[in-house]
Amino acid sequence: MRADARKNYDQLLVVAAEVVAEEGADASLRDIARRAGVGLGTLYRHFPTRDALLEALLRTGFDELTTRAAELEAVSTPEDALVSWLREFVACADAYQGVTDLMAAAIEDPGSALHASCVAMRASGARLLAHAQGADAARADVDGADLYALGGALAWIGDQPAFAGRTDHLFEIVVRGILTDR
Amino acid sequence: MRADARKNYDQLLVVAAEVVAEEGADASLRDIARRAGVGLGTLYRHFPTRDALLEALLRTGFDELTTRAAELEAVSTPEDALVSWLREFVACADAYQGVTDLMAAAIEDPGSALHASCVAMRASGARLLAHAQGADAARADVDGADLYALGGALAWIGDQPAFAGRTDHLFEIVVRGILTDR
DNA sequence: ACCTGAACACCGTTCAAGT
DNA sequence: ACCTGAACACCGTTCAAGT
Image 1 (cartoon, protein in one colour):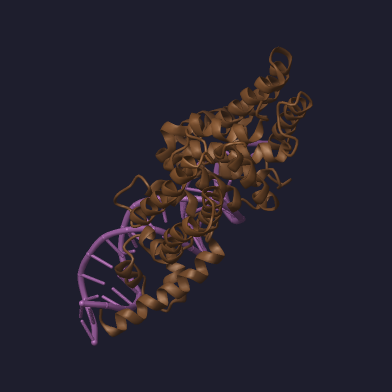
Image 2 (cartoon, chains in turn green, brown, cyan, blue):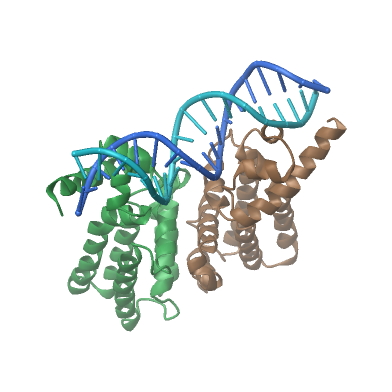
C-alpha cells in the first residue's frame, strides 16, 4: 500500500471509531469521510461496504474473544468459562450501537466482511458450551447457534436505553435457561 | 373528519400495512403516500410522526393482547397463561419487521404515539406474571419490565432471518429462566 | 379544512477526471 | 495507484399555495 493510501486508511479508521461511537453502526459514511479530511470515494476504495468498515473496527475485539475462550477454558470451571465468555461476547457486540443486526445477518451471509469473524466467535462459544455440557453444567438441548442468537438478543437489550439498568439482571435470567439447575 | 379526509386516512392505513409488511418499520413514507395516491403532506397531516402511523397499524393487535391476558387468566393455569401471553406478545411485536426497537424506545418515551399501548401491554403481562409468582410457577426476581424486555429480545430474534428456524426453541430456553423448575 | 408538491438538507453509491 | 467531488436517485420534513 502506498504511503499516502496507508495514511488515509489509518485516519479513516480513527475517525470512524469516533463517529460510530457517537452515532451507531448506521452513522453517515459521508460524515466519516468529511471528518477524516478525505474524499468520499477514498472511503469506498478502502472499505467497499459498510460491513467492511465495521469489520475493521470490531476485528480486534472479536479476535480477543476467541483468545479469551482458550484462556477461560484453562483457568475456570466449564460453567464459569461459558458464562464469562458469554458476558464478554455480549459486551463485544455492544461495543457500538446497532451492530447486533449486522452480526445476526453476517453469520449467514458468506459475502459479508463480518462473516468469518462471526463464524469464529460462534465456534469458540460452541466449544465452551460443549465442555460445560460434558460437565453437566449446561443443558443438552442448547447448541452453538442458540448461544450466538441469545448473545445477540442480550446485546440487543444492551442497545436499548430503556433497558439500561437491567442488562445484568436479564443476563442472569437468560443464563438460567442455558445452565442446568443443580 | 371530512369525508375526503376520512377516505385518505383509511387508504393510507391500507397501503401502509402493505408497504410496512414488505419493507419493515423503516419503510419509505414517501413511497406509502405515493402508493396511496396522496400527497406527502397529507400523510404528515394524518400521521405527524412515523410512530403515529405504526401505532395505528399495531393498535388492533396490542389491544387484543390486553384482552387475551384476561381470557388466559380465566381459562388456564397461571403458568400456562403467562407463557401463552408471552408467546402472543412476541408474535405481536413481530407483526412487522423492525418494530422491536420502537417498542423498546416507546416504553420510556411519553411523547411517543406508541407509549400508551406499550405501557398497557407491560401492565397486562406484569399481572399474569404476578399470578404465576403467587402460584410459585414463576421466579420471584422477575418483574413486568423484565418480561417486557425479554419479550422484545425474543421478538428481535424473530426479526433476524438467520435465526428463523430456532425461534420456538430459543423461546423455551428463555422461558426456563423465567419459570421455576419443579 | 384539507390537500398538494416544490424546496431544503440530507443520504448511499458510482464514476469520470485528475495527480 | 490513488484521490476527488460532482452526479444520480433516493430520503424525511416543512410550508407556501391552492381548493
